[in-house]
Length: 172
Image: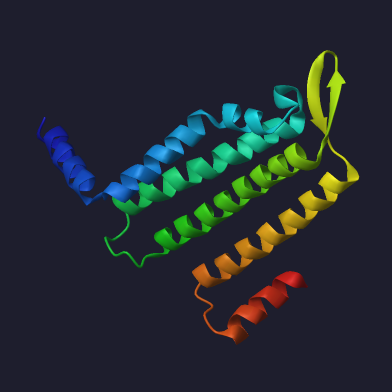
């Protein structure tokens, strides 16, 4: 019985370590995890029937689970320093996650603005055109470059020489 009470005291200590921003991040990840299918279904016309859609939902949820695991690791096992590698990894995953979401949202708005509306089986759908595909590719390249630059900065490559070397290595 005392072992259980000792674990409860440790749990309250852990809960006291968690900051309000961390609660916000965990709550946001939980909401995104639970409603991943509905959120992505809003941005895609084809929905559940497409195998690529299921892969997107899986990637969306996988990144959420990784963030949960890293937060759990940080507060359960890691030392209490803010400069530990787990927060750096959380930043990297969050950057990849935001880049992934931004790419899909930008593609959605490009299709909404420049796509052609057609009626298929009584449903109105917006289909891709050459213009929407080109703009989607350009926006994806732009978001990928911004994400890579952010990742290089998060990894600690501060000088132009270090950052250029990393980006050059990725480019090769």
